[in-house]
Length: 221
Ligand SMILES: [Fe+2]
Image 1: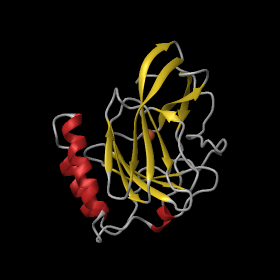
Image 2 (image 1 turned 180 degrees about the horizontal axis):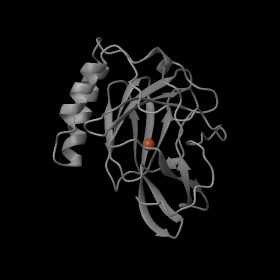
Image 3 (image 1 turned 135 degrees about the vertical axis):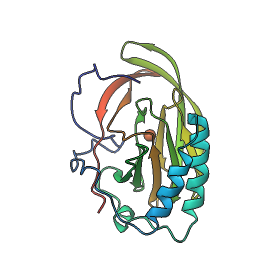
Image 4 (image 1 turned 45 degrees about the vertical axis):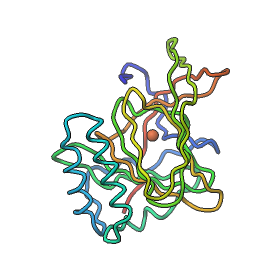
């Protein structure tokens, strides 16, 4: 979804419902992050993104993610196990120089989640590596300028090993840690690095006000 013409009013990342997040470490570029099984992971993703449609690619990526989550030869970096204070952690582990996709690990402490947001028109496949997540997709009903009317469409309680995809225009959603006493970790494969998106702040009833948002990245190593 194009929004480059919208002024970026502030640099923040998705805000937790617990409060506004602080600006985090600036993006550290595409320096590769080493972890056990990384070559296996990227080989599976490389093969999956060779499909000829977003639907085919996301189906192959969902299958690859589910397989990798259960693979004892793949271990995400230790840093990914650490939640951040005040916001969910967002750490880029890999960018494909050949295919352009971006792999991001997110760590969710109890109570952490996202506001309603989009993915700037990029497809994304998300898998639960550890713990449980609550994912709610929203249907866009109408729009009036920067005001959008949404309705919650589907909710999914996703446990370890499950994977789902978001394919534009069906890209509006929230994610929350579903457990009150355990962290959750998810792995996200984006069509391209997602460095900005739209967040939607609740107004009245089903109406939300769009806010252009820059996405910060926590250090991964
Ligand atoms: Fe998202």
